[in-house]
Length: 217
Image (tube, rainbow, N blue to C red; front, side):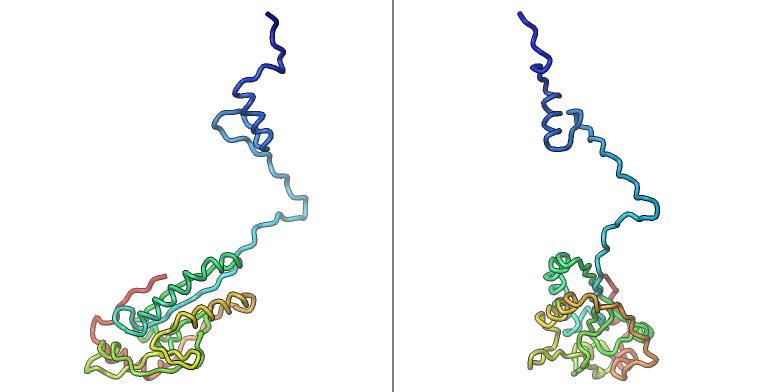
């Protein structure tokens, strides 16, 4: 019987090698990874390109209470929904959307965070509603001694008044910021020397142990 020619001898290892060669990942046919060729060094005086870092858009909720306030709680819920809906859009635009919730528990924290009205929503440090309007919030009044009258922010959108931030308003505000991301430089509001009278009244009369929600991000 004649011997087979060398080029007619085919083994599983050889077949695997040829398949890998076609796909551009030639290996030994076993489970080990193929050795990747070393990347050439950049010429002297030149730097290697690094992946572009994503731009960051901070969406912050600032409130005095997230346990019982009937304005702060739904506003926080709506903001979380808006962020979740827009995260895929942000990723497609190369934007990192970061969401934080801050519950101020003392006058000092309120001053440090430059809180003018609760709840407040800021995008890269800018309040989305520059025209602050407030009205009596009974649920926050219940947190004080003698049911002190406390006002919380109300939201005006397209001719209507809302006790909490409506979802379309939040989506428009965040989308607008994303589309103008190059102009959305992060700003840090200067701490307040004095609190607005309404917030000072809340902290002065707040019942012991009330409104002590924790911060989260």
